[in-house]
Each structure stands twice: as C-alpha cells, then as structure tokens.
Amino acid sequence: LAHGNAPPADAHPSPRISAERLRFAMRGRLLDLAASGPLVVVLEDLQWVDSMSLDVLAEVVAEHEASALLVIGIARPDAKSPPDPFAGENVTHVRLRGLMPSALRALVERLAGASLPTALVFAKSNMISR
Image (cartoon, rainbow, N blue to C red; front, side, top):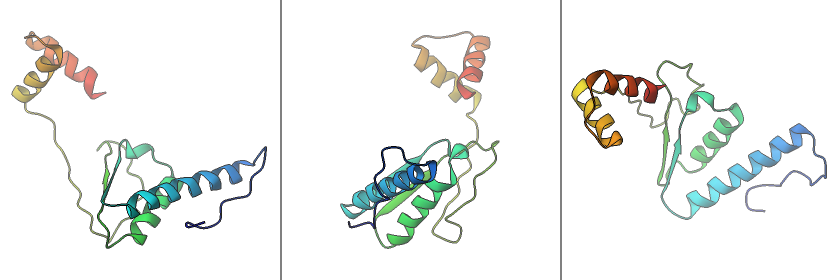
C-alpha cells in the first residue's frame, strides 16, 4: 500500500485497532487528495478536534511542505485552543471581531428576508452567535 500498512482486519476490533484504522484511512485519503493537485482543508470548530486528527493533519502537512496545500482552522476565540501542531510553520493567525451594528442588521435582515425591529435583529443575532 502507498501509505503504509493498514491495521489487521478483525470482526470485533479493539478501540485501539479501530483508531489505527481510522488514522490510516484519514491519512491515506488526505495524501491521495494532496497528491492529485492543490488542496484546501477547512477544519471548523477546531476547539473540539481530537489529538489523533491533528496528528494526522500535521503528518500530511509535513510530507507536503512544498505542495499546494492550504489548511484553514476555525475555532471560537473564547474556547480553549487545541495544541498547535503547526507552530513554526507558515502559519498566519487571524482574529476576527464581531460585526458592526449596521452590518449585523443587514445580515440578519437579509437572512430573514424582511426589515426587522432593532430589538428583534439583536435577539436573532444572539441566537445565531451561540
């Protein structure tokens, strides 16, 4: 196999074997995609990511340093940040701020498809941001 040896097949694998199979499958799929051309990987809600997934992604990034590979990780600023496996690499951190009230009104009203009272606009925006 191109990406190493798969864990052995078993009708009732242990959790460790299941995790190894998942790691092998994730790594193989990402390597296949990265080898076929430019690749963008978007990881949303990164505050919930498990260490195995971060390890797999870090391995793929390390193997494709010169390739056209872009990894975008999105996490809530108020959440505990996961360990950064890409420290020292070409990493840019972008901290986004909330929308201005006028932009927030425009977004909520566009989503609602109607003009809304101010109190309702901000009530809906609080529901969306949770």
